[in-house]
Image 1 (cartoon, rainbow, N blue to C red):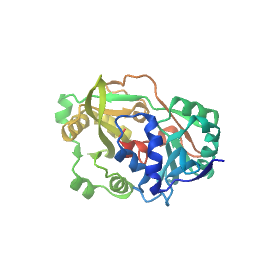
Image 2 (cartoon, rainbow, N blue to C red):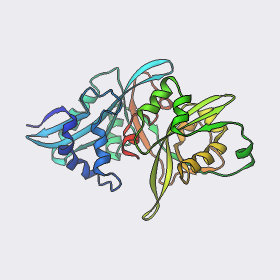
Image 3 (cartoon, rainbow, N blue to C red):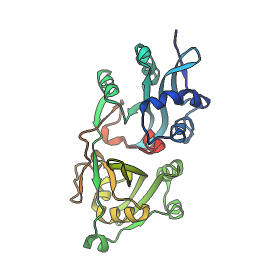
Length: 290
């Protein structure tokens, strides 16, 4: 009879063969290993749940824990990902899920579900949310030069300028591909967290993009986006920015277009949060470099 127990840090080598069944050629063993490291000091020794048949891992779901202040309230979040169960053990999938939602006060998210997982979460009462992405191009215009905002991208300048929760975000997201920027304007500041990664654009051709995972002040971000896009592109040496269209809150920059591939969806379960409260910080996206 299979059993379910907590996934520990030393389980990685046993879980890894199962993760290979996702058949993602862009994720190395070192990428997957990040799911078993307590980057944020919130895991308490648990990195998800494993389904065991004897000594063999036949099922797994990753959980990344975090604590955020959202709309003035402290919120506990559990980001789930990499939910996989061998076909002959699929009847135990819901038992894995039950472990995740045992604490009703924790917001549970799944930002990269397969179509099968998304359909299941929908049936289980999760809220579906749009994850369709927009590509923002860096284009030189007069506004690029005359915009009086200041954009900080170096680690030293960010360390000196950031404070409070934004400084914690900066410290917590320090993997080699994590990137940060601070947009300073007379109207206020906007902290941005990104990953620099390669995306396939045609066949085997892959070029670098800045995948935005957090926008601290969407209105300020949109107002100064022409200058910001150029600065990020030159500083990070990327072709463009990719951002969830939802995070722009209805703004469609003229120098942008929807990412090809059609509509994308994610899911979350929360008593207190709405879709606009949820972003990519403290998720598998920043650890696996999606």
